[in-house]
Length: 313
Image (cartoon, rainbow, N blue to C red; front, side, top):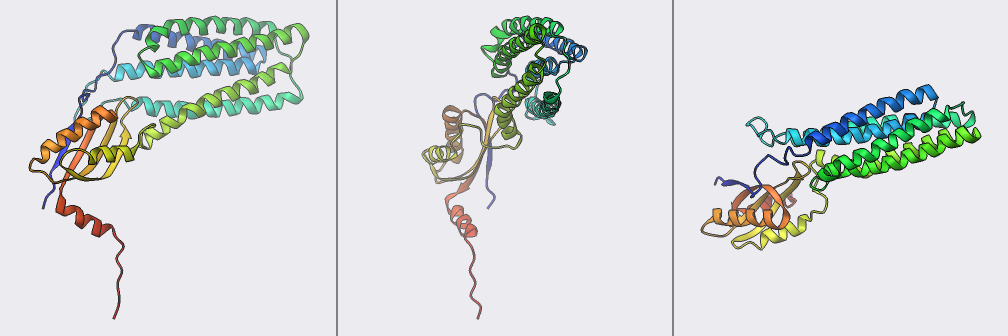
């Protein structure tokens, strides 16, 4: 007997998220941070300071985070199509993962360069380092101020906002290192600061790449409890059993689920609607695909799942 399938979508089925408010501010913040990155990297080479280059790379990570948030807000406004039925929400996830991998490579390269300079630290133009790091500190604080309002309703932008505050602290450390070189000729401060900044970048990536990787691998969303979901589904009136549950994230804001329900009711579609509403209300599942099975079929499934033992002779 064919099993009816019901594709159920919760109340938040629409694919348009966010608003255009604040996009211009975020765009300017991206441009300013990219310009600052170029200035610090070029200035770092001119001053022979890996710490200044590392600070520039750290600013690049914030610019990329802001660009991803900005791009995601724009792409999320595109309507879904038959070919792109979930829209463009996952483009941000792919781009974020690629950017994290690139930043890991750059951070490791900076650390290797810094280790090489520990034994024989080169002469560093401390005054130039202090000047550019001071400019970076002003830009970091200004960027944080620009995106503060938008950060209140977007987790992506809020993360970028916090990164800018962290960058301000890193820039302050580079100013201190440049001042030590300028005042006392302590060139060893530059590679030590470079190692510290590389460690900070890698620590940020380590705390953020996990959720991105989980989304790419279609893992259960953080904080979800599949056992509780199955228990709540089993408690829906008319549901005899629930199995074959899959939970995954479409993007940062949307969770999807598919499940088989063994139904012992006259109106299986009413049971489906109740299950769909419960998933949306209690577990924030925006998209659910529910396959209905009659109660006698579940016994067959259980028999098929058991190991088969054979006795010859």
